[in-house]
Image 1: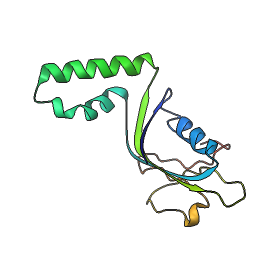
Image 2: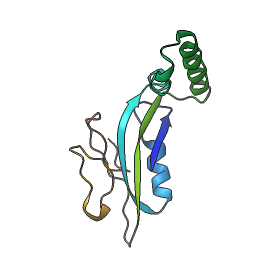
Image 3: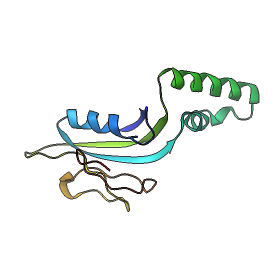
Image 4: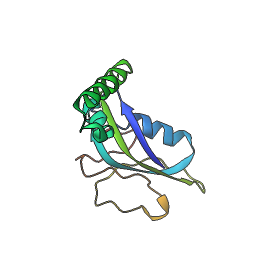
Length: 125
């Protein structure tokens, strides 16, 4: 599924989506297509209004205000692919691109090339 997820801390941008994926009980492959601060996110989603500067500015103000009220500091857009587990304990495992799906989703999640760290959930980055 295509999703957007928000973070209160740009240094921990995936905390919420990883927690959500873990609660599903499925293996997950989380692909990040785009990341930005709230204003950049708002600009991308409202780019169709750029030919009308007044409408574009109003939309950016409204989105920025809303995201600020939520305490959002970072927004990621991408896809989450879930596969029902056949047994054993597995969880999200970020790794470097090039992006290729893990065999059978055994170690299930890949970050985009925009992040330069590799982490194992629970161990830290």
